[in-house]
Amino acid sequence: MTAIKICGITREADALAAAHSGANAIGLVFYGRSPRHVTPARAAQLLRVLPPFVTSVGLFVDAAADDVRQTLAAARVDLLQFHGDESPGYCGQFGVPYLKAVRVRPGLDLLQYALDFRDAKALLLDAYVKGTHGGTGATFDWALIPKNLPLPVVLSGGLTPENVTAAIQAVRPWAVDVSSGVESKGLAKGIKDAAKIAAFVTGVRNANV
Image 1 (cartoon, one colour):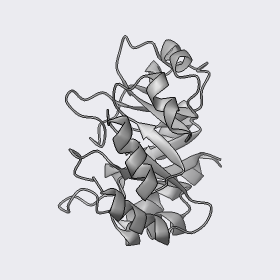
Image 2 (cartoon, rainbow, N blue to C red):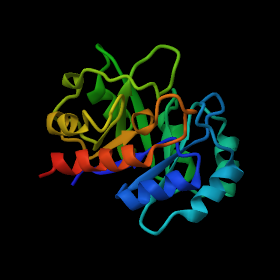
Image 3 (cartoon, one colour):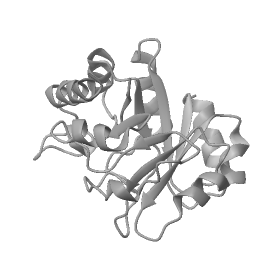
Image 4 (spheres, helix red, strand yellow):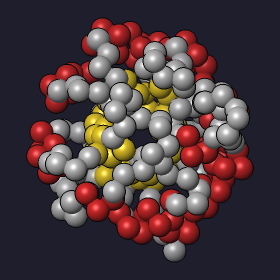
């Protein structure tokens, strides 16, 4: 069964909508330049409403190590997610399991990347969009993903309720990750649509039939 992460949560209602729809994890963005950014204090409030067995993931982009530690002290997430140019040594220093995000484009050796980050729990594969670090709504060519990656794959980048079934059938990832694909156009980024979250989860379940 493909696991589901709803990223960029900023409201209690959206965290609960994700959990009640059957999502396995929520993502909290600690990158100040993101429109979905939350402070550690706000994250702690969101974590308090999560029911049991929903994993919390903290997303960072090239953050100072002390900033990550201070965030963990205030809002102890279950899993870290690194979206920048962090090294394997950097990612592994916090005593918390982590995902390493990769912005996929032609010419990138994903097999070598997986070997370099062999201690990661998974590689999160996202679309490469110059000047950004995710949450763009852009997809990438799934054919660029090697079939024999030695780490689990979390597929991200432009997933929506409409395309997630096909994406899972094509890639067979361990998990899928969505942010903008479950937001309503015209509303602020970070405000999720409960109906779209439910439709996304249904699309994932349909792929696993």
